[in-house]
Image (cartoon, rainbow, N blue to C red; front, side, top):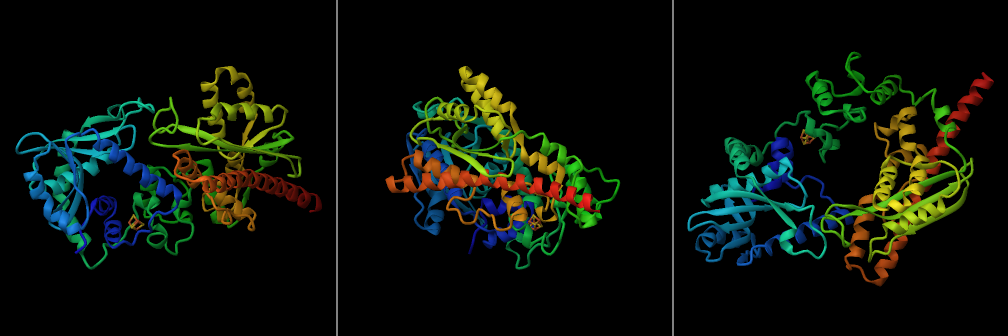
Length: 491
Ligand code: SF4
C-alpha cells in the first residue's frame, strides 16, 4: 500500500484533486540542474542541523517497511538524547521527523529544519503534518521548533551560528486541531478510487497540472491576464468567469490587463500610439546588457550572508540603429572567488561612451544599485550607468501585445512568438535557474576540469543569447512602427 506523505497532504489542503493526483504520481516531476541543486542544498542543510545534536542517532532508511516497523518502538527504547530522520507510520499516513530531542522519559521536542532565512507560514503546515502523524503513532511531543537559517551566518563560523530556532508550539497546536478535523476526510478522499471533482480556485493559477486540468481546452483563460491579484482572481471566480472574454466591463482591470482583454475581444494584436515616442527616446548607439547571478543557501564566499544574490557574469552587445552588432563584450567570474568588484570595473570600462543601455526587466538596474552600495569609490561611474538603463520589457508591456503571448512578457515567451526561428532550445544551458546551479556546482568544487571548461562555455553562450534576443525584440518593435508609418503614407 502507498502511504500518504507530507507532499500529498499539503497538496490536498490546497486542492483535493491535486492531493489525489500527487498520491498517484501524476504530477510532473521537477527536473534539471536547478532542481538537482535545490535537492543538494536541502540535504546539506539537514546534515548540518544534525551536527547540532551531538549525542544523536540517525535512522537509516534501507527498506520502508523495516524502518516503519522499527521506529515507534525504537523511539521508546532509544537511549540517546536525540534521533534524526525517524520515519513514522500511522493509519495510512507516514511522516519523517527531522530531529527529535528527548525532553524527559515520556516526551520529545520536535525540530523541523528549513533552509529559508526567515519564518514562513507554510513551515507551520509542514511541522504540523509531522506532529499529526507522531501523535497518531503515540509519540508524545511537548515542544515544536523550526530551525531556519540565520542571516548573520558567514563562511567559517561555527555550525551553531548557522541556525536560529523559532518556538512554534502554539502555532503548531492550533494547526493540529485543524488537521485532526480533516484527517479522516482527507484519508477517504485521497484513497478514493474516484478523483475528487476539480473546480476553479486561486491555487489553480500556479498548479503544475493546470494545462491538463482546469486549463484544458480553454482559450484565453483569466490567468492570462497579467499580474491578476488574489482579490481579482477570487472576484472573477465568484462571478463564475473563467475566460477573458467573459470579464464584465465594469470589473476593475489594470492598464495592461485592459490591453490583453481588448486584444482578446477584437482578436487583434495591440500597438500603442506612444510606442514610436518611447522607442525614439532610446539613444544610439544601443547597448544591450544582461547579468547572470547565483544565490545559495550556504554562502560560496567569505563575508556574504546566506541567500545573497551574487553577480557572476554579463553579456553586453553594442549595435547600430539597424541592430548590427558592432562590439560584443562578456565576462564570467572566476568561480573560486567573489568577483563582483571586477564585474563593476569591467562594466565601467565597457560603458564609457554614451548611448542607452537596454535591459529586459529592472533586475540589471537593481543589481547595479547593489554594486553602488558595495563599492562606494565606484558609485559615481555606476550611477551614470544606472541612469542610462532603459527597460525594454516595460516598453513592450505598455505598448505591444501579441495574442500568442498569453499574458506573459518574459524574454523566453516573447522571442519565439515574434521571431519564430529563435528559441533557447538549442542551448545546453537554457534558463537562469540552470545557469545559476551550474555556476554553484563549479564553485563548490563538484565539477572536474573538463566539466568546468564546458560549463563556462555554455554559460557564456546562454548569457549572449539573452542580449541577442533583446536586439531581435527591439528591432521587431522598430519595424512594427515603421510598417505602420508606411501603411499610413500609402493609404
Ligand atoms: S488545476 Fe486546479 S482543480 Fe486542477 S488539480 Fe490543479 S488546483 Fe486542483
